[in-house]
Length: 412
Image 1: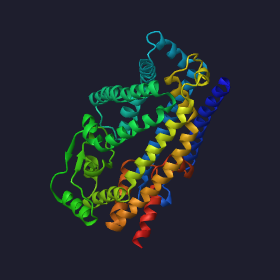
Image 2 (image 1 turned 60 degrees about the horizontal axis):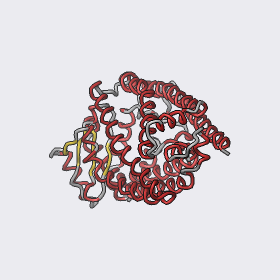
Image 3 (image 1 turned 180 degrees about the horizontal axis):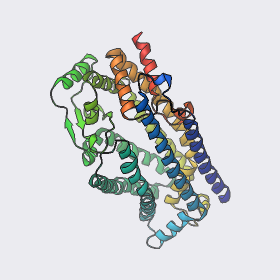
Image 4 (image 1 turned 60 degrees about the vertical axis):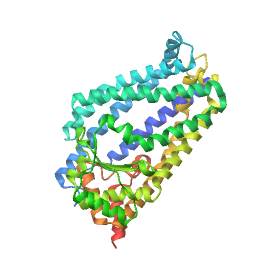
């Protein structure tokens, strides 16, 4: 039976790799050196060629990194890498909490070391070449160190707590862990911008002036109480622009990247904010959180059937069952269900994006939102003609052309 589980794991990993390669290939078939007719008026020929070059470079880079990850995972499985790390950890402790922390710490450390050269190349060569990167070596190193610290404190803390819960509750650990995870998720949804973001970026209240007045005017018009509008120094790392809505209740805030403000008119910025407000007014924030918590509960419930099963450990060549090995095996076996749930969530997310666009178009200016979306896509060198299959599997947003067409219906 352990051999059967091992074969299933290998089949899942191979299938996932082949699927990604197929989707990438389909995307490549949509590339062309000439400006497609449907993109005339959005891209000019020179900018379109640059976007094509950008995606070609990233596609080749993605092929290299994903293939390396695929090969490393197969080597870990066929050569007993997970069993080796497990044996190494057991030489120093048999405490289940410490074993889990050391095991995942070692795996994460070497995975990060392996990926570090590629991450550096992506940031300082590819993104630099196409004019996006503004990250300094100092910022990059500090980000890494802060990321490690957060992983140790938050990730390690939650892992230790979950192992502790499992140790004292056994198979019933899932619903207690679910409650803990839900509380933590809600807490960080509310306070992420107050606690985590300041470690990496500076946030300042949007200064008084025409833009702030225009935003407040729109918020009052649609009955949206908004006191927290912040500008984040996104230009510290990249020239790419963005905006996002975060928080719940009185802690809700809208955050604008300084790069977004620099490149867009007041009307375009208000239209973008109107889209974000639309998500809140349509209850997308709450819906997304509830679905995420339900999905996590389902995953933990299914995990409770498998955890501690000696067959799972034996599938990786480990003779002594443990929490951490069960997590590794379960994570691989859960991949097909995760893929299906991910597709469903993408479909729902794309629906929500259409609804937020419609809200912005009906309550503000559809033309301003269209202009903003075009500018964002062009400035970020977005691929505006992805293959439909790639969109179905990977896109949480409709394509630009789909969003523009939907907004055109509002104008009629």
